Length: 487
Ligand code: MN
Image (tube, rainbow, N blue to C red):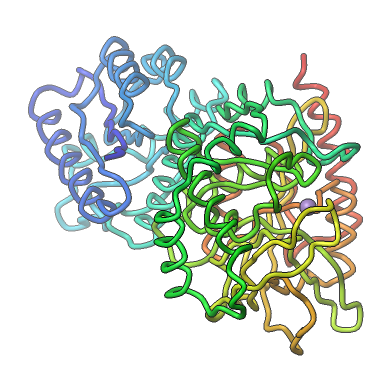
């Protein structure tokens, strides 16, 4: 089980009695957080650190502990911050600075200097915040009484993002084939991706998958078809194309498990010895949490897996998406893909359909077709700007499809842009965001912001507040900053 270390800073000057109380109070705070957050992450209390050696020791332990996904620090008393320099320099886990107190309200009637000596995070945390800033340690600062539900929910978010970061660090991505020929935005520096996010992205021949497809037995396919029949509405008795996709799903599952992969890509330009483009199969894989990027888009695939992990403890839908076409009159985006839309987005029971693809020259593939869910969401794209990665994230609202689209043979969702259609679309284009995104109704801009901050990734936000002139100035500034950071 993933855990957060809870580390309380102090010093020896206070004497035994005060330090005993510090230990007692911090254990109460840690236990409370552990109780409230236990469904997401355990909070493990650590003995108070009083000097540089103890801080180095616990930071080293946190960095080496595979189960530790992050660290919470709190200066209950004053903890001279030169003591924190070496520890923070070796800490490799995400950091949350909790600016709290053991007491919520001041005890006006009884307050004395003993109380003042014990409860001084107001200045102890300032000393600590200074050194964290001077060392430029990326961190989340949470302010308030530790039992305040708002404080708990902020720490919960940190726990979820920290777990997703740990997942990211160990994520392996299989690319079946390479990037779609000539396409720019889906390409990227895979070495740099591994340096920045931990993603191990490697190429496999589609033949490696075909080999597994050919090993799938009829009995395995029968069992899979029974699953499909119970989950979806079948619209045809012509089962051969559906059985073909069932084989792909079984083979993909096997490939992912055997190789320890959490995400994959494919491309319709490299499907040798596969009769169809994986459609239904990939849709099913996405619903299980595997990241997917079409046309060799490894960045969207990996980001999708990481966002799915982040959203694991929440309600909502997360998956691969593509901006496809517009309704200019109502200001709506129709999002879909050739086939690969996660059934996580289905508003009702999907239908299994078989239609020609019209591209790639393969057999007509089986796919799930449905209308999409509604609600607030975030659409996120990762681009490679050459000297750094850039996340472009937009707040969007998924809406009901205004009219049926009986001739559209793919799953689809529709959404509104913010602050309005024209500004939202122009902002995305100025930011250089691609046509592939990960859309999530479970996550919000706050999650993406925290992910960007903790991974030191540039983020362009498109929200209700976006002003197109200000955004262009921000992009200019970001270009300059990125170049300065190279020195
Ligand atoms: Mn595409």
